[in-house]
Length: 307
Image 1: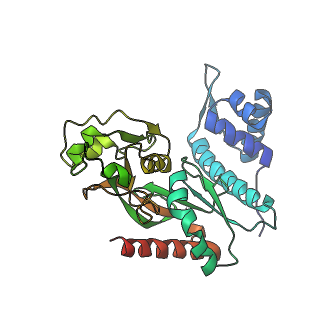
Image 2: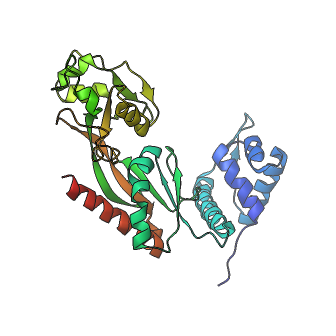
Image 3: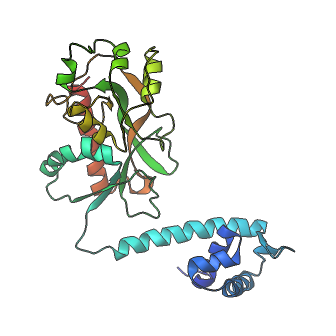
């Protein structure tokens, strides 16, 4: 099949200029001068026989209607080419499936279960990458992501892994404190509340939201040591430093091992659930499909064990 394609350098310069609406910033991005960007854009316009930009009196530029449509397609095409190139440059000997998730999920849920994955798929290699940033599958070297959200991701396959509920936990020794009993949520006023920093998650269930949801007032929910990850707060609680707000997803084996206990049964459902996400077009790739199936089976087993 014969393809009529524009000069790649001209297309690259145009796409950068279209995103920035500025030839100088586009030049900085692709390491050429603003004049060179302008020349490449003119060459592309000549090749197409149509104007892509309107030159403004203020020396700025604006996309023509055709330019807007062409820029959107050019960006998509260059992203696809970037992803294909990144995968082609990956060492042949490394066929690992790259899984991205947040640190607390990796520590509390995924890593403890990897032995089960090896038994089920002994030849599958996994590379676990932790980050709180959203994954861009077109740009990042990631095959599968596990994130907390609402499950609506255009162009991506999203399978529900687990719903999330929040509840207080503490050490067994703290529960035995006769002078500061922990029999009901209102008793939390006598204890240190261990705080998790999760400002990047809208409507995350903080102590303040949890107490309001169970109808408790008169507890200072804003003070206490602050930790950047759930597993750090859980470790502090296990060391007897206070009461942490745990989730059924990220509690790990703390409860089964007796390192933490639940002082009372009240729990609050979170605003988000955990999903396993991958590009729709890659969802049925053999290794991704096998990994997704294993994850969903593990999640189902966890729900049966802790209904």
